[in-house]
Image (cartoon, rainbow, N blue to C red; front, side):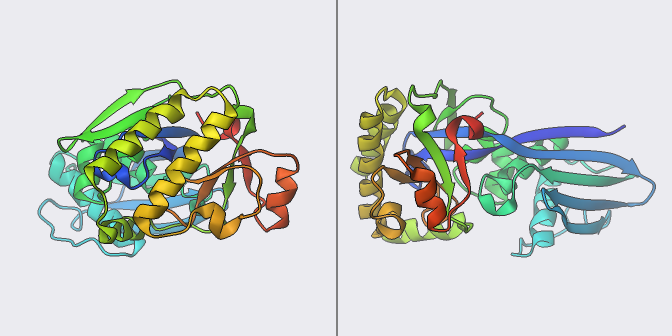
Length: 303
């Protein structure tokens, strides 16, 4: 019997970085995500293959001895090491997971390129949590770390308001499809941003005060409620300027597109992945002419 699991990708519309300290944040699951297919095999091993739209990009094999409970393993930066650490963490959370005498053949299949930053790790972790029958937030906390909003998006079919309250995630599904959604586009910056590096820079800045967290939460509520494009643009520009002051960094518009007539907002860790842009006449020619051809309409991206 083949087991099949699926999790969505994610985008963080508001609250980047501040979500770590309890700010209310708006996040959306994406229409593209990741599948995980598991079938038993005759060997005493776990055979793993990872695919993206370009084909198989990673494969490895774990002996069942490597996966036994109590096996000490420190997460390393290589792909195999990170995967092994997550599998061992899942076994620790559920000792029955991978405890039988059979092996497995596993295939993970991404629906989007790995460098898009839509949550290749979080959607995989969510699928593994489903397979292992463990809590995805706890699995993330003990392995990759992070705020958990990406894991929350993985199994949701609507946008969410997300907040960490007393160390626990609070998730509420909301309607977020503005009347002007046809004028919103996601533009890829041709590079993947390491969220761990971004979080480290935010922590080093040390400016995440209670008033800053409260201000981000207010902006999130107002962004969700905005009914006019002009109001939405003012709000995302306020959000960009607020975070720029905290991070000591220029906004993405100042860095890449200072002459663009519309508004542009970073999403998630600053400096890479997708940005949100409001359309103006000739916007496609503007971005493609500057070397950014991956432009996806809001309604095609957001679940």
